[in-house]
Amino acid sequence: MSVALVTGSGGLIGSEAVRHFAGLGLDVVGIDNDMRSQFFGAEASTAWNVLRLTSDLGDAYTHHDVDIRDRDALAGIFRRYGRDIAVVIHTAAQPSHDWALRDPFTDFDVNAGGTLNVLQNVREHCIGAPVIHCSTNKVYGDRPNSLPLVEQETRWELAADHPYFDGIKEDMSIDGSLHSVFGASKVAADVMVQEYGRYFGMRTACFRGGTLTGPAHSATELHGYLGYVMRCNMERRTYKIFGYKGKMVRDAIHSHDVVGAFEAFFRAPRSAAVYNLGGGRHSNCSHLEAFALAEQITGQEMITEYHEANRVGDHQWWIGSNAAFQRDYPDWKQIYDVPMILQEIHAANVDKWVPVT
Image (cartoon, rainbow, N blue to C red; front, side, top):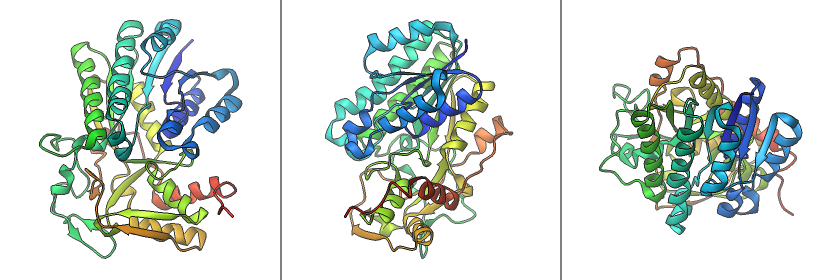
């Protein structure tokens, strides 16, 4: 038996990873206690996704309602499967800037402590298994905001001759910048994943994601940007814009393309690898541009409300470079761009996201 162990298996990337690795013939073990509903409320619950995975995959998927902070329970799962575990995909996290400020202890315990718990269990029970960690571009803090950005009609942009025009590389420093409480907890997790790779010779990768998106997102205001744009348009909610004139830029990568990268690493793992992974120049947009696309898809105008102050540590412009990953894994290709992503999110939720009367 070869097992793929996925934390955060009910979430966007976790559930996509469950389906993908089950499709490769692995037995998948999922760990998810639906803390997302505690973080963001009932509309953000991932319980529906877990039910769908269990129904669709049958015996190929085994679910454990376990908190990654619970060391004893987590160790019990790792002991049970032991060296049958062929890969560990760690997507469980507290994912919001804003929420972290409300409860820094929980944020750090989940993001940093939970990651350490996963790593130590891999070391003790299945040290040969590659560890794929969902990190974030927020490990760079607000340093991207120091780039010489130029204001255009619908977005902020870099000059074409700037070294980062094709995307920010992993050589950008994470020091001397404002990270937010969330960013700091994710830095701790990111560095620990690297350290277990180097110190213990484990095969680990930190994927520093941009905007990870797709139809399986339980989109809510504090997390799930493109999904929430579409949800607001379809349900006639007011979308709150925080600063930068709504021209802040995000690259967006579909969950299908993300787990394709995970598979590539799984098949040829390295030690202490660090990769930016996002939409890059292939798939990016500003908030204003996303609004326009949503309006084209639905035929309905966005309802928006502008707030001058930006979120603490928020990026004014982020387009990441996938060059390092593509150099190591040249067969990996992106498929989705922003219009395709929004069209799919709309189609997947057209019967669910309707105005409340």
